[in-house]
Amino acid sequence: MAAKPSRSRPGRRLFGRGADYVALGLIAVAAIALAALALSGFSLRPGTNLSPTSRPASTVFDLPAQTPTPTPEAPISVSLLTDQPSAEADSWWASSVAASLVPGVVAGGDLVPTATGDSALTVSELEARVAAVPSLSSFVIVHAGAGDLDAGTAPAAVATEVQGLWQAVAAKGGTPIVTLVSPSNENRAETVELNGLLQTAAAAAGFGVLDLYAPVAASNGSWSPTFSTDGVLPNAAGSQALAQAVVSQLPQLVVTK
Image 1 (cartoon, rainbow, N blue to C red):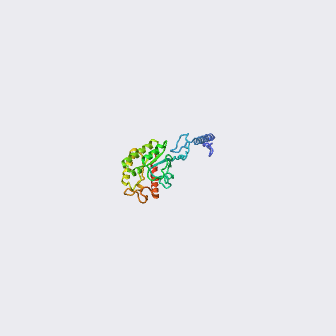
Image 2 (image 1 turned 90 degrees about the horizontal axis):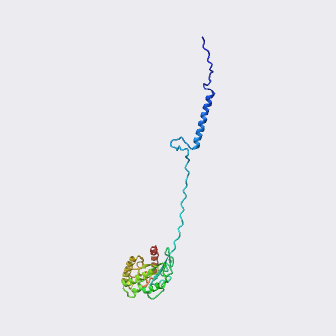
Image 3 (image 1 turned 90 degrees about the vertical axis):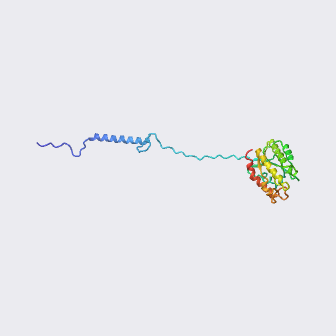
């Protein structure tokens, strides 16, 4: 008996249209899921943050810090109490502090500069000047002792009197700056001894020392011929040398009051 021919047609799909619709549906669901993951920040790459809430970190720009403008410091007032002439235009005082050539320092008006005289003032005469002012509110350069040496007073006694002058200045509210006595051709050894005593006493009292001896002294303790014509007072070159010493030394002596 002959077999019946097959009813199936060549090339016909086995699952029909229903299977096609299911496959298309699955593809659509997968596409929607991938799109949702992409929008949420989710990544399938290895080593990435899988948190769905992750976002790229915002960039922070550091602004340069602004440096405040410093407030200029007021100049420090310095007055002069000296037994030597200081009112002349070519004196070391007029060529340094009074000329505003010392950085951060201004000439004080507490004491009147010493006028030209035949001889140096004594310590007692300077004490009278201090007693005549109601108060002192600045640093005071105390340049004293040469007049007493000229009068024949022993260096140790002069040193004691000068220390009393420092205390008189401090009692009025001033801050003494001790000055070494300038050279003297007549009192060379006495001047050297007095300066040693003043330096020791100033260190013990905590006062600064302004050296107006070494810059103009010769090796034997007298005035260098370059800086004094008469061996008593500085000439123009000597006054300039002393003024330069003041400009160099004084700023370190008025740091604190």
